[in-house]
Structures are given as C-alpha cells and as structure tokens.
Image 1: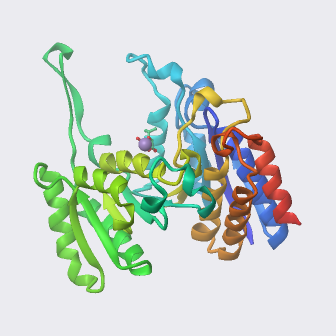
Image 2: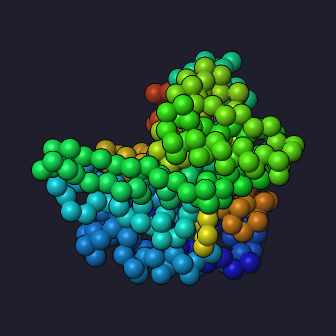
Length: 354
Ligand code: IPM
Ligand code: MN
C-alpha cells in the first residue's frame, strides 16, 4: 500500500520523538511491503521562525493532500512569558485543528502490565484501566468570543456550542461505545452551565438511536475525582473542549508516565496522530524524552487511518517487549541504566525487522 503521510515535528522534543516514530514506521513499511511517502512541514514556533506564523498555508496544503498526519508537539517557553506576544505557537495548533475540521480528539488511557508500579496511584486501583476520552476539539471556550473591556481591566472568554457540534462528537462516542463495552459517560457541568445543559439535552435525545448503550451523565468535578479514585468506573467518555483538555492530562499519568499515551484527532477532512504530552522544552535536544507515545500514535495511525491492524499490533507488541526488557528512557528506568530516545527507537525498529 502507498501511504502519504504529512510529518509535522513541531517544537521542543517534537523532532526527536518524531524521528523515532518514522524509524519504526519505516521498519513496518519494509516488513509489510508498504511504501511511505513522508512530506515534512513546519508548525508552531518552528514555523513562526521561518514564516512569521505558526500554521502557514504551505503546511495546511501539505496536510490536506496527505492521507494522515503525524505530529510531534508545539510550544516554546520564549512565548509563554511574554503576554504581549502577537503570535503564539499554540495558535498554530488551534488553527490547524479548526482548518482541518479535526473535531474529535481520541485520547485513550490504559495501563501496561510491566509498569503498574510506576503510576502515582496504587496498583490495585489502576490495574485493568482501559478508557477513552472523546474530547470535542474545535468548539467551546477555545474558539468562543473573547476580549477585554473596561480599558483592558476586565477580560472574558465565552463557551458556545451548537447542537450540531455536540451531535457529531456524540455520534463518535456512541459508535465507539458500541465497539467497546457499550458504556458511555457524558461529562458536563449541567448544574451550572447553559452550554452543558444543551450537551445533556442533545445526548439524551440520541439515546433512543443506541438502545444498547447505557449512558451516564456526570459532572466534571466528580469525574475528576472518580478518575483517581476508581478509573475502572469508565469506558468511553465524551466531553467539551476545555473539560477534555484538563481531564485527559489527569488521566494520562495513570499509566505511569506522560510519555506513553497516544492520541488521534479525527473529523471532516483528514486525521492527525500525536502524543498526548507537550513539547517538554527542558529536554529538547538532549535525546532523553520518551518516544513511546509518538510511536504508539503511529500505531493508531496504521490501524485507524489505513486500516492496517496487523501493522499496528506489531508496533504495540514491540513496545510491550521493550517495556518488559526495560529498554526505556530515564522517566521509566528506576534510576537504573536508561536508554536514549534514539536508542529506544532503533531497538524497536531492529526488533520489527528481525
Ligand atoms: C493539548 C494542549 C493544547 C490544548 C494547547 C497546546 C493549545 O494542551 O493538546 O491538550 O490546550 O488543546
Ligand atoms: Mn492539554
């Protein structure tokens, strides 16, 4: 099969972890006789440096032409401490999501048997956790009307959702629940927010189309608590943009390291695969960041974008073996002998080619 993949390394550790995912994907292509055509493009601070904007049109065109997008991370501290900065790397990510219509962000949380003692939570609490957040990604407070009043001394951001926006993400949630354990949790703050009441009303009206799915409606604050108390309460969860941002960071560390969880953003035109973690600027260029979340994102890409299940399984099996054999970066090495980012990538690709 011929696979056209747009490659967006982005900022910070993005390029290093992306390199490893490319190594592993190329090994898969060799093993299974596929041809991958990688087309590289700039995004984030890397794009601001060259084009003056974080998601330039050339990058958008490359993404539109590709069958799938593999993305690293975005963000540079030089913009974080400058409240007056006119352009920010993160704006590139938001524009990319909006312009590519990536309205559903799929963020799984699962555990690895060999890493149960790495979690900040007790083993018996996390063992067997396997849940998926579907975070709405192109609406809500991230994209609502915002501004300043009162000579700049008052600021506001607004959260707006239409029924259509809620419906399309809810459909993804119900469909995924049907493929899994037929349990769906709608996370909102309907006791306070009008937009949450519309979420609840819309999802409730859809229940009749999915009679086999049992739906629970829970407030976001309670879900935040329950996630660390008993994460096995959940299977598929749908929620709006900001709640999803916060809860998926919380959930991502259940597995033991933030460097482990992959994600997909899907929607209208194409799909994008990226690690849940950020650009980790302190580690940039040091060859120490954990590449597994990006490599597992490539596995998601093979499975979901190209329907290549066996290829995805070979990647996941290789990752599991590397964890068992402790071929891991320093975040997982228990202070023992750790491997560099590129050594982990090479070990995995060698294993796949064996
Ligand atoms: C994420 C990130 C982004 C978000 C930032 C970098 C804009 O935190 O992908 O979760 O808030 O969506
Ligand atoms: Mn986030």
